[in-house]
Image (cartoon, rainbow, N blue to C red; front, side, top):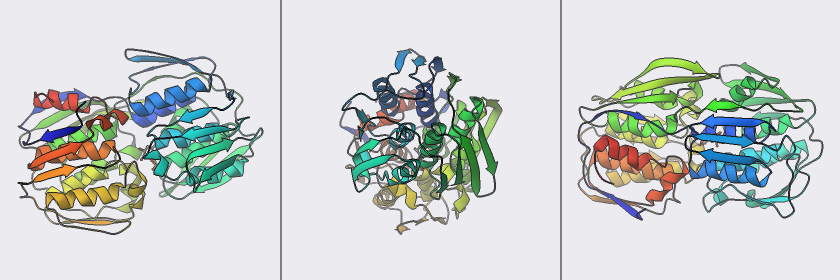
Length: 440
Ligand code: S3P
């Protein structure tokens, strides 16, 4: 792939039906859970991105057998107790989800191992999972809770009580995974975050109990002796779909239908926020699959967008889509305010800082603090200058958001590192080519 993508045009009106690759969170969870079952698990439409491939190479090193052919993936896992080889090194690549979740599953590792990741992942905080995992009895060595880290599990993890305050599904899931390996009941009080793990475990008939209140989920989970295999068809990824939803909303005389998207309520903050801003989006043919909500998502060009004060309780369900929401705010009449979003700076790059920087480069006034941003929309903005986006730690979402900005606000954009899309959405440029019927 080229090192820089240059875009110097606004996209022409389009009307298309598309399919989006499998959901990343569900793909990684399916791979990890399948590694715990000695029977054969089968999935269709597993996302074949670098993050998911890193998950597959980790579970192979832990004794699973994996076969991937076309759209189908089969895993025969090694059971609940992984065999840890001497001097084992697990590489989570770019994936915070993989790195944090797999540590939970390794809470009972009987030997030391090392977890490493790429440059971006090595800047991210692992204290949010090592802290509760220590309470189970595991021990760690690292420099300031950053990768690389060395972990040793404990033979009999003790169940814990854990209060997850950040709204991080990764921390919550890591603790749930560790709880599966403990004797007794672990109790979690968690700020709202995506709940795919809980839904999958319920489907697997694992003793998990969830009480949902307005702001918190109370989860109790018992250790298990065995996990059943899991047959699963992974639905399309809402976070990836969002790039094309926003592209359509910001384009003239265009519409799009995206088939089979996961519309789990804990993932559709982007839709709820954009609707408040006046975007034309609707779900068609909503149905349930293995506890998850699936729908076809229809979006069309939306004029008269208006600024919003984003309700804080929508933050976690839109956590990966804020860069795109900022673009809609840029096109809106009036001021938009997003508060309590410091978690954005904990992602693959410091996304709150990047969002502000890209808006400024576009000529959109904005005021940022360490946990908020105020965006002064300009519905008439047409960019004339050259904008170069570089040194963003290959953050896939910064790259794709910049492509969408270029195709809808104009100007000449040079965007580095197109290969960053391999992290979550390898067919992003191919899908764009199909929509635009152009060469990339
Ligand atoms: C994820 C949880 C979120 C999200 C990430 C995927 C998951 O991270 O940003 O892309 O699959 O559990 P946090 O748990 O850090 O909020």
